[in-house]
Image 1 (tube, rainbow, N blue to C red):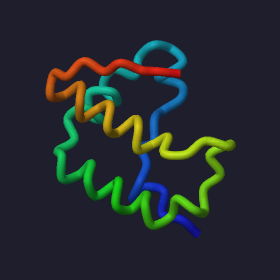
Image 2: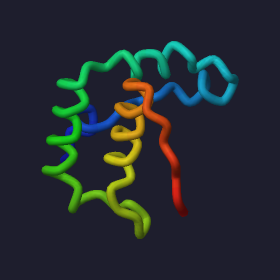
Image 3: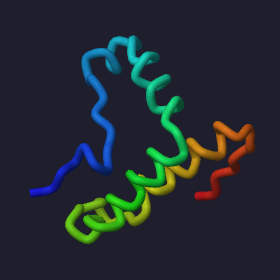
Length: 79
């Protein structure tokens, strides 16, 4: 079994769907760089066991984007 809490975030879907998830979003942005680093390290340990639906580095990309945004960097996405 995977310890999802060690590498992921749980959002309350009811709050999210009703536009009331700001407190949860704020908690994500309030994470320290150390907490984010730990999540990334834990994710690296289990990444091969997760079905990313043909994609790779999804969570890592999200976490990196959060770090850049926190530091005030503008992120340009290319698809």
